[in-house]
Image (cartoon, rainbow, N blue to C red; front, side):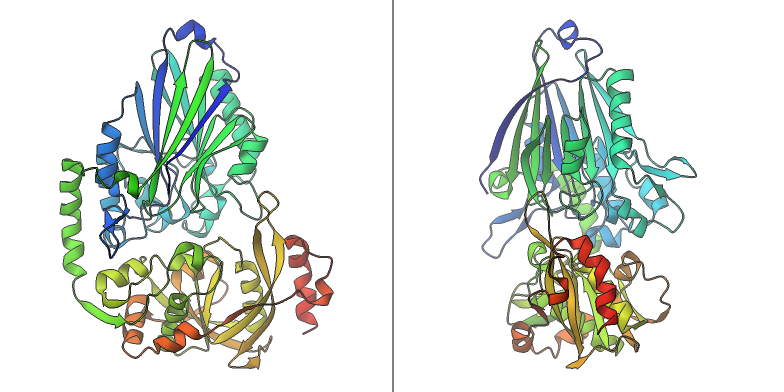
Length: 525
């Protein structure tokens, strides 16, 4: 990836005191940002020795070399969970690292609640967790914003987290304000009018293209007065997209890159924003910071001791890349769900794209490789689900780019396009037109035994389906399956087929219209 360099000049909005009255010289603020790291903390290399994940130590060295009047390091969420290091310390190791890095603030993401809300609050003692829209007992669950002063200027940073967190936070522990545009407008007015800030940064975990609700693009379009949005949620790299007077940045995933945003203030009340995205190729010659490297090694030692050994081998690469998992089936998705089905002796098995964390390279499969591919140390639960309930679940889950995008075993599914994202024009959802179980039509009234990861069970709101078995872990299930897997068949098999929309759906290209009509479609099956 080439380094992206974008320069945006915009007028500061609503200054209570003109900046020229306070700023007598140019002031430079450097904002560094990460997002969707999912516990990936160390430098990682591909089979040819090329750096592919930057890691904290190299980033620290680079940041410390950059001159600025103020430097701020921010994370847009999903940082405390998703790697063996994060999972086996329940996020505490990541908390130690981000304290050592000097992060100023984090907007918690959905998976930052994987270890529990109470645990999250204690993970990063020196870092502010920011959110304006999460409440505990009608009080703010986190700090809503922080102010930073430098040479007569004030920068306000507020946090916004996705209401989807309600799927992961303990039931009833938190309440989320769904009217995000109004809440953001209120907080921007408070920062501008009452606090007299000169620049506003929104640190968000919303994503760029959810089907419903407020996303980062809509926030930029609808809320006046935000200079910079640093977003997580989606795993895309966004290198300075401008909507109105707002610049949007997103730093991708898994430490494959990070953002460097330069805010340049001058006495003429103008703010220039320069965006650079640094990928692994940019950092390959940068040595790791000594202090962060030493801390990381200390934290990794017990994890590596538990991760030595071989669990199997594969004659092919097993594809666990995020972009592939969130848009269609892959051989690793088929292998994982087949392993769950076999271990649980169930009729059907499901998992979401977000339950798989990495590809598995061809050759020897070490325990560490397996734990990178299955990063959440999850157990397998079995529920009884009618064919109709399964149909409804899959209709909700087939969102392109979402971690809910389903992978399955025991069934074959036909889907048709049912919605195009209005902003980007990208196909973003499918609806189910047919499901076959072992070649036979799905019986809408029959109860099937369905195996799935506990996280998928929780995030898909399946609590009204009682768990009838939870005797296996994903790690054990896949380890056992690797011993006798038919890799040629797994690579060739196709369980998901895209077809044309049924006639009765003609004229209902909008995803919401199609969704409203699919129950009628079911009743006619």
